[in-house]
Image (cartoon, rainbow, N blue to C red; front, side, top):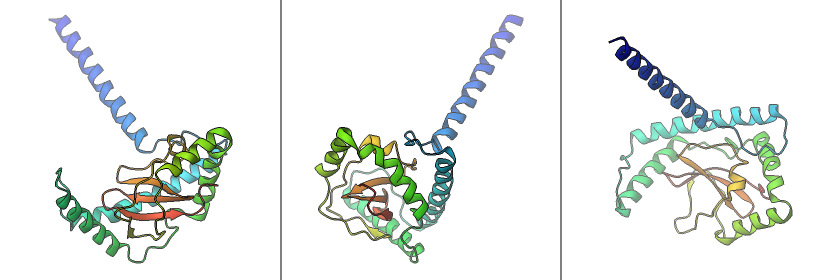
Length: 202
């Protein structure tokens, strides 16, 4: 009998520990540190991540409010339904961010640090390869204007993994795209340009 209770207690302990580890890993992944810091001071990196996350969180609050009045984007393969849901969400965000200005997320200080983080990845032979990848599927042009739709038929250029590792982590609602030399922050569900910074690529 005692052996049975002991086995049960051990099992419960292991399950609880597993749950705690999983929860901790989840919290860490939400704000995971930048993988490639280019040797910048830890205080500078910490300031970037805190400020950037606060600005992203503010945008997500607006997005969450916008989603309340938009049709739910359910799993479907019907492009028409996807487009309707996407456009509705975009219109709601555009209304709530009607007075948004460039630099609300990519502030001058954040832009400066991001350029410093990206710079080492763009030098030498590896840097040349990275730039070649950026050119491969880049659209001819994308208007740099926040709170507007990303051009419907323009390709979404690949962002090389080494550059992604040098940028602050994003939630699934947002992504980075590099068009020419410029870094764009795009809302994936609304297809909106949330913010941008020019000359991110030197």
